[in-house]
Figure 1 (spheres, rainbow, N blue to C red):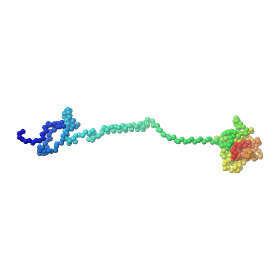
Figure 2 (cartoon, one colour):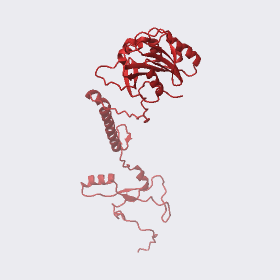
Figure 3 (tube, helix red, strand yellow):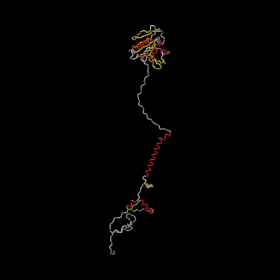
Figure 4 (cartoon, rainbow, N blue to C red):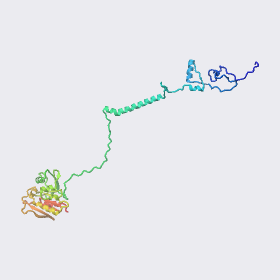
Length: 344
């Protein structure tokens, strides 16, 4: 000590004092050139900004280049300098300076979309285009709804000839003629050779058809006794029969009066039978000449008749049995047919 009084102040740090953060020695701040006045010793002022040592990728790259790859040293920054550091960005900068974000995800999306489009195009080609070139058509299945089952309608029975007999005859035979004439009718009613002969006193009913259709009463009357005018008074059907006895076969016919017809008018028309000149043609064998006395009154029990005798002993008979007109070439045949008809 030499007797001089020196002010006591903070001891300056040596220039080579290392930073407490392990970096190179921090040089003292240069004196401010903007002021000619120095801060007096012991005066307080704003503290300098803190210095921060931070290692970044950029600082490590520069440190490795300086040291030749021997090591890295942290770089000192002030808080204001941090905003100047480049920011790491995962995007890719295009030449125009535009950052394309998510390029990898976009490529994957494009690939998936391309695969979906190819799959759709393949399905359309297989189901729509390919059948036109392969010549194979997809089978078309048409769904048919079956109709509701309905009960089957009963088949109507085949038409049969109406019989006025309420009691059965000894036998029944069907005859079919091509044309209805007295000659064909007589030939069909005759017993053919080889046929079994009927017992005497029996009646056979004959179902007469012309071209497979039942002969009508009007057609029969026009052949048997034409000109009577009975056609409009009788029902359309007729019953035909043949009576057998020891002398042969004797045809006969039954007609029915229409409901509502006046019986008196029918009696007047029936009397016109006696004017016929061809009654002998109704027999299967010639009855001989007719009696000169003409028709006479007769009876079969309570039934009134009219008859004409022939030289052979045969007689032609007609009469009304209730509402049925019976015409017979035999008196016994007349009575047998009347017994088979309704009593009332």
